[in-house]
Image 1 (tube, rainbow, N blue to C red):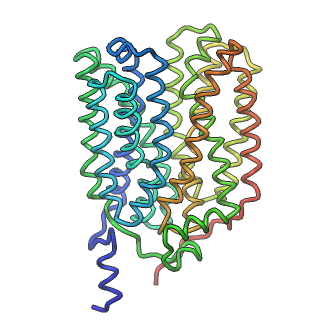
Image 2 (image 1 turned 90 degrees about the horizontal axis):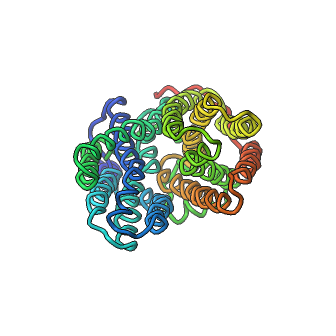
Image 3 (image 1 turned 135 degrees about the vertical axis):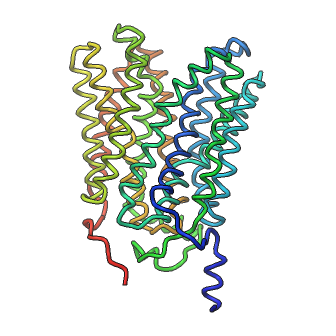
Length: 418
């Protein structure tokens, strides 16, 4: 064996066997379902945490808000680690941290303790086992021709977890009490540990997707290259808008419904519609990525959001209108993720994709922090959410326009390996 071949065999993540595509997708989507599903159910325990700690909803909410930001901050670093030492180790540690943070939360009686357990351990672990690492790893382990649909399936895994884990958490809460229910939810996350073994593999032997992928590039050089890439910066700006929109809906949609004078059960139904149709939108977008320009698909999604929000503001606020609105928002909710991840891979190849997509995810979470925070502040000041909806429309139109100048070649038929 030549020295080059030996070095390749010793490279991080190198492996001697190939997993079936379906198993790779099951491992990645299942991991995202368990970590995201557990995080998204924590709101069910907020009242019990407040009763037990007497800290007040504001202090407890601060821990949740910090978790949103920390989840985003973790992903570029987790991506860089996965690019260098292999995704398996990063995912393994991430899953353990989610389980540990969730299990320890009932023991925390101070704001700092809740920030540590919820905002740092659980959210940081979910960032390590989040979309930046999962999608980059999936892109490495499957053929390039299947990456678009694959990212859609992985992305849908997070929504599936949200859709399924919430009723499980609710049933456990009623049957076992909030402490045992939360700790059992933490233990359920450990079911994702075997996926770390499946996803530990390295890069696929394939034709590079961009000149940047033709030779190894260090992390610092890759970051510098990305920050000088106008299309990458425009992509990140659009994803900031996505985070603003998604966090505002996820945090304040029940409040919007209450402000419309509709029964409280419509809040739960609307969130269910949001999660259910997000699964559909993610898979459809993954299918579309291989057939049309990704920048055009992103522009279409953001424009659709602007039109849907404007139509909702003008329409009478009935239960049917609200559920239809939630379904439309679900179709566009996180359907931006597959084409965004696909463009990062197209710009720079898959070598540093986890880190570079993690940087884009960070801009998403900064937008999310502002969307959640501004929604509450505007409602306190005005008694409604109208101003935030108008800001959301303007941002969505801007995001639709900013993707148009992105330089992207038309999709080409997959090359046949010699």
